[in-house]
Length: 135
Image (cartoon, rainbow, N blue to C red; front, side):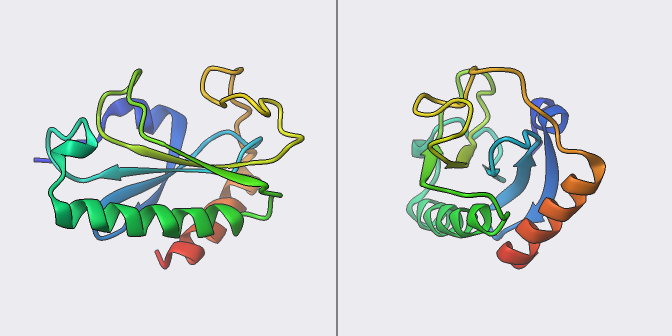
């Protein structure tokens, strides 16, 4: 049975579910950032998914990229990564990057502590992301 790692709950807000993945907005107002967590029990690596799930995940990554761009922040480059060094449960980050963001051109992971959204901004961006994803 699929169980969401508690680390995601502490660092992100739920947006809903796509056909394969649970979708969350990373709570860092400096970056438009969506995390996709395939709802497959025990999945840690992309190779743990069958071909149909991999195709679905690719479609969801593309949709998440469109949603990241719909959050209203400037995006020069989309970064997509399935790292799992800290939280081993399979998940994919889709992060909008801008040449003036605090971590540019390096990675956002481990750069600096997150700057959480204000409650009002969180409501706005979760609504925009959810609408872009059809959630």
